[in-house]
Image (cartoon, rainbow, N blue to C red; front, side, top):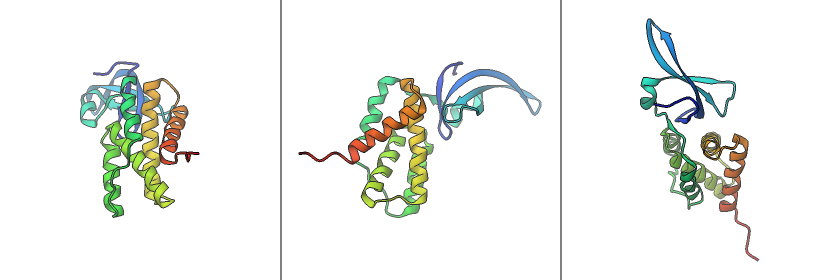
Length: 169
């Protein structure tokens, strides 16, 4: 069970902070709910039933000590993506929705490499890349205690260093 103040990750909505646990009436029954303030949408609260949190894939944000694994994945060589756009989309979408931050880092890395190699991404590819950057930056922001914009800049800079290295002189 999470407590107020815990940084958590929703597999689709991203990182948030548990503001409080409250009892709510719904269709005649009373249940406990997490009220979660999302980092990406400061004015939005997400209500998640406590008894459904595990089923939904809610988990704690990674601790700062695990960030090295994220950076390692982000800066590794890209994985092979299917040439068929439908298969590629399903693979990448599944990784984004799975809730595993290392798979999110793979999506960001692989789509960034694809953009570098082909000079562009499809509309769907751009959307997946943007979603991946947002999820990744949110979790990094929670782990480092920085704002979302700073975390996104760090992700983009590390990608740029790896994908477009400066030529040796």
